[in-house]
Amino acid sequence: MNTLALPEPIAAYFAAEHNPEALAHCFTSQAVMKDDGHTYTGINAIKAFMAEASAKYGATSVPFAIEREDGFQLVRANVTGNFPGSPIVLSYRFRLERGLIASLEVTA
Image 1 (tube, rainbow, N blue to C red):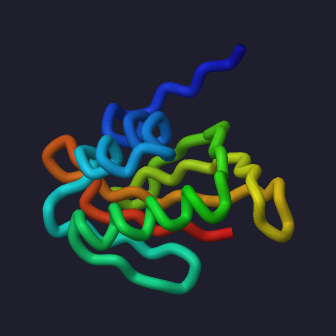
Image 2: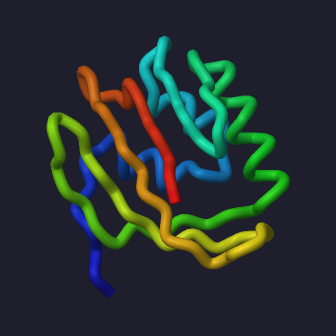
Image 3: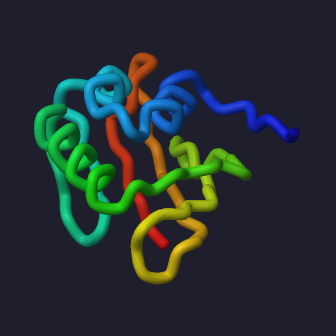
């Protein structure tokens, strides 16, 4: 199995994708997440969104590539779940700050 070397907060994010409480520990308190055309600011908003998305779609993400781009970590992952178009490749654009995720933008 090919294991991708991800920075700790990013590895923790993918490991905790169905555990909103654990997910919350990956982000800064004022983190901003953009996904599915919406913006979520702060831990509670991100946690609520992730819990709802997990329950609704049951998606599983398997990262397969990472590159650095202008201070961001760009991770590409195969995502499968209960949604139209599954499976799909999504891009996760992380900005890290003091060992935590300060911003995340998810795009197709």
